[in-house]
Image (tube, rainbow, N blue to C red; front, side):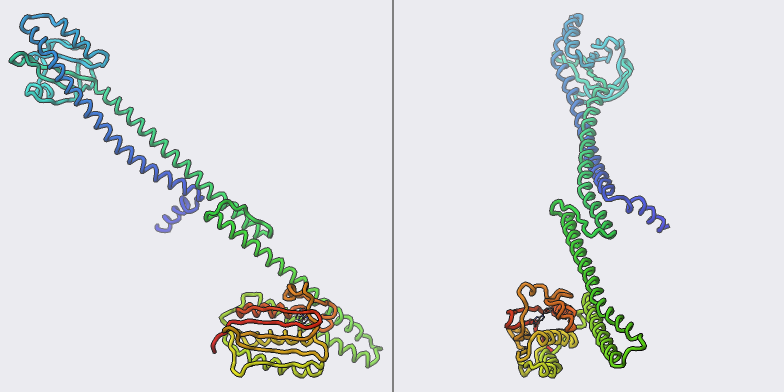
Length: 485
Ligand code: ADP
């Protein structure tokens, strides 16, 4: 049962568009508010009008009674026909549908401004009873002469010293109602206009929110469908505008990433092709049975060499792609940079000596800790020292220095080699970028070394700087935040 209710609610409300919800809520709220307001003020106005008219009628009765007292007395005493009286009273009741009747002390009708009223004796009605008691009252009741509801009021008429009779005045109740109805109509109309305006306004507001959201949805779909250059127009700086800006930023970033990835794959396949081609060539030649043994041996050597190159390349690619995928910073722990530098210099000392390059190490006695992984830091230093040795001719010098500077750990690898042309410096950290392609490849370089270095340094929260002068040498400076063991 509960689920059923939830399901119905979902269909009727949850699945509706934002604009519908918005407008519905606005409509209902304004309807309730306006209805309450109209009802309250309408009822107050209606009773105020009723009271006002009733009161006016009572006062009118008293004024007439007071004004005409003398005429009534004359009529009684001298039996004068009430010609002047009648004219006066007719004048008073003219055009207003109001009727003025005069009753004598025995409550017999003396005359009335309405010819439809026949001579009769009136009952002791509320307003007449009140008038005889010299107070004021009104009453609403059915009137047989005009066959409609009327509002009555009455007042006593006094002669010189005694009561002469009663003046009764009445108007059709319908007239009061018409006035009240007019007030109600105005109020209802105003309320309706308010609700309509409010709803229109909410519709406008809802649209201004919903339209950019729809655009965003469509753009997200396009993006998912592969249109990487898709962007949305940014209107204003409100939340929706901010969302649009964020979306565009995300799309731009995505496009950049995917394009970089594509380039990377194209480069990687290109790099893999050349060792593979030479492996294929050698393998084909080795199939020749008449091949002299020393040629055969040479080809096998070359095969081995190419396979090694391929292996190295594959390892580096793997390394880089691992670093590109979300690297786990939690796996970092304090590593002594001094010990790693010592180890790397040891590992390269033989090669340096063979090449006739002086490899020196300049480190403090105490350890210097950075947040890293031992393998990663070793990889960084090996790449840098390897590059330095590759690009430094015999008789040159390569130095590795680790020191604490301003509470940070600084690692420097400097050489007195050929240097890097200024125009190439901004690019050397890009994957596959090489200054001298042919030579680098001959030396077994893939252009990936420095990009791996850069990724690792970033991962460890450090930064890397290069200074190089053509023909004089190159210096790589790495700065890492220091940590404690
Ligand atoms: P590679 O594997 O080809 O050495 P790297 O990414 O390690 O690729 O280096 C990119 C390029 O930067 C190299 O091709 C080389 O030309 C240049 N380079 C790097 N280190 C040095 C250095 N110490 N002296 C001169 N050039 C260097």
